Structure formats: structure tokens, C-alpha cells
Image (cartoon, rainbow, N blue to C red):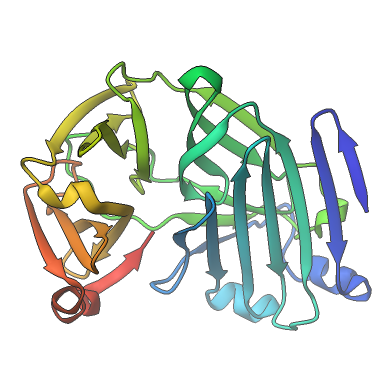
Length: 310
């Protein structure tokens, strides 16, 4: 089923309509919402070629498993010239046939160049209009009651203040509703203040606690600077350039990870299978140390100690 609402086109599809009643009945009621915190193998963000960002996840704990098995989902936001396509696949029960798919399209007036997501409904996007005008936006996507909602119950810590590492909590408020029975997704877009010295943004990464973005910005034809962008006051601070950290010049991906000892580490993957690692022992947004490791060194020393990646 396809519906058109202004600039946004919604397409719903289900592979198991006969199981809809069962899926809705097993996820509690409005009086007792199910809050599920992701586990170590839960949500992770992956940046793919073509300005596509995919988020996959798993909702599973004793309460949910007892009710309906395992709820898994995947969300993909694809940005191309002229449009953004958000698509999702939801598995509300352990039965593989009980699968629901939906897409929502938003029209764009710019060419996307970089994007990042904190969770399946909060995206940060940089793009370019004609004549070189940069666009810097936050997108919040509301999929309505009956869908999976992120819950930031811990609030947003202040940048510069130590904070425990947190996993995003997710909530199915009331009964799960298949996409065709929910309200249309709503794209809420807000402009962010663009720093004057940002000429071209190559990569974006977002702090899991929502305090800041990391932006890798080309400042010349052969140099790049890593900025920390404070989301509370929309200001940017340069952390280092290619002269201080030569690996920045060949970085092509930004990923946040949590180590088992409580350290937050940012992984900037470079060409040539190297990793630039930034360490934040207090999780206050201040990086005390950085080092470059080969792919093999990283896999041997740090990969076994990573409890979560996003």
C-alpha cells in the first residue's frame, strides 16, 4: 500500500498479514510498556558507500522473550541527490515469516555528503546546494505509537563532565502495531549553526550520549581537521589537523566504541587498514590520548575488549 502526503511518500508492506493479530497481542498494553535495553551485540551503525547508513538491532530480555521471542529490526537511511529514503524491516516475533517492511521518502534540495545517526530516529546530515552552499541539519523521525522508540532516560550529560557509559534504551509503548496500522512517519528537520571555516565535511560521527559530533573537515586540498561540535551551544572546537595527526588525512570513517574497562574510544578507520584511536577514559568528551595502529594490532589489543560499537 502506498500513500502520498505532500513531499513525503509512504509505502507499507507486510509478508504475514495473518499473523498481525498475534504480533499485536503479545507486546503488553498501554498500562505496562516494555522497556528493553540493548545488549552487547545490539544496535550498531555502519556507514556504507553511496551515503547510506544502516542501523540494525535486537530487542531481547527475559520479559520480551517470554512474551513473544525476539524482536529484531533494521533501519536504513539512503541519501541521494533529490531524495532521502528511510526503510525498515521489523520482526516482532521469533517467526521469520512475521516480517513487516516500510519505506518513507523525503525530498531534498541538496546533495548529501556526510551523515551519522545516534539511533534509528536521530540523524545528522551535511550536504551541499548549488553554488557551494553547505547544509547542516538534524533530523528527528517520529514513527508513532506502536513502533520502536528510543528512550533517553539518563538525560544528556554536559560536555566536559564525566559520565558513565550508557546503552540506548528502547521502548515499545503499548501494543506493537504493524506499519500499515501506524501513523505515517514524520520527518522533523532543524538547521544547525554551520561554522564559518567548514569548507567540506568528509565524515561525521555522533556521541552516543548526544553531547557532540565529531566532524572531519577538509581545510585544504591536502589537509583535514577534526572538529568537536558541541550540540548544546552549536559551536565547534578544532581538536587536531593533519600536521598534528597525519592519519586524519586518510581517515574515511568515524565510529564510537565502549571498552570493558569503561573507556570510550573513537575509531577513525583509515585507508591502508590502519586505525586512529582516540581515548576518553572519563567519558567526558575530552580525549586524553591518541594512537595509530595497524588492523592486526587493533584486532589483537582492543577488538576483544570492545563491549559495544555504534
